[in-house]
Image (cartoon, rainbow over all chains, first blue to last red; front, side):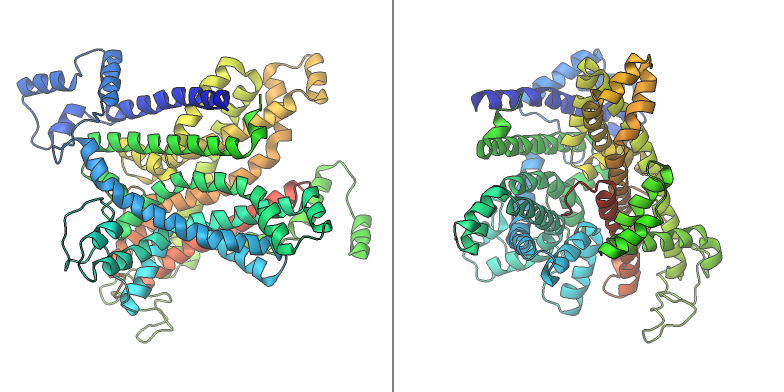
Length: 336
Length: 304
């Protein structure tokens, strides 16, 4: 197992450097003069330009700049936002809990519905239920989620008036953020109605964000279950006279879950990409909306830092998924 | 079942011909009703897109001051002049959606062509030569895969500038690793088979071995991937358009139409509903087709 871990880590190192090079190149690849871009619309005098170039390190050779960038990175310095003048890392961390909260609820919804739906569809293969689940999940998989969000707003907020249109919390309540997670903070605040408000704000965005993972999980669960159900050991378990519940629930499901867990892990990238759209529609103050706003405000250090952070998160989660996979399935571990 | 199959066999083209493989493919494909429905719907969209200038009752950018936000024909206040209603500046929604089909299909076709040809080339090189070539190519692909697709596309568009053509290039780059990985793994499994060795011993050059000998036998999974990428490209391009980083108004691109319609969602449901529905139905039918293709091109694979 230790060797497997080292192997995986060694594979990750070049990718991580690749990602840092990509992020490093980002500002330098932008069309036009980076100094002019950073200085804004007023422009710069030649003296100020020389000064800025020195501050930004653009007067040094490229490789030196890159290693400077790496050095800063290792100290947790992602640069300073042009618009707000605060460190990018600080901005990122301030918004990260909102995205985590949204993503966690979304994936919980996706697993809670997708897993049982996939299992039942596999067990009753060819039934009306199976066809319905497959039809709905292919539709979910094909869904432009930004449109789906707008439809839900029209129906639940516009026509029924059940849920708020945007944001994380009603303006009626105010409390200092403690954890950054609105569900927890609202409970800690002891204000009646605050928790309910947080839940109501969270429902639609998390359904929207969970839609594609839900479809993927249902499809994957069904196909892995089908594969496992045709295996010899399942037939043996049936022949032994075990109850169908036990055969499906214990013998088959446990093995089918191996691939399903991998697929769930891989949804992290999908969630972070989906968060950009979902947060934009619902004005959810998370990192997705922050990235979009930063791109529009031409706050390139923020975009660069955000890209780097998000890619790192995806890589780390993928590593954890790989390791879990190796943990539950020894044959993977001993490959090569 | 048995009788229909034996009667079908009698009219089957000779085994080994192109006609025969096409016939075999179609007999598998049509067993899947969803796939056939998808194929017909894609055909319909293609016809609409090609004949947009004739079919659409209005020019997609023509504004009419007397018809702001007219509801569709079946709702009170609607008229046959604007079958699906009109938008906030009096443009016919139906005409815009038909013209939008052109953009979406064009985006899909361009992105897949770009991404697939580059991906096949890189994948062939990596799988055939292995060694350093492979390491460099595959590590670059890993870097691309480390970014969530839409985010990377957004970053690339930020560099290239918001425009439809840049959005297509960005999406093609994002989809590239899938083609590279797929080609590489098929090449690796084909490379040491006897027919390849025989061809090499007969003196075939590297290029001939790669392109003429190995590649044709790797095409089936690539075609399936191309279909899936086609629908992803349409979705991502619409998402970029929606975020204002793809096609720019007044282009009748479905995602950009949705972005323009956003402020009217609570007043005029149709300006939001129809462009999105067009995206959903197009992507769904392509995905249905993709599922059918996968089953038909690889009958050995269990139908799941």
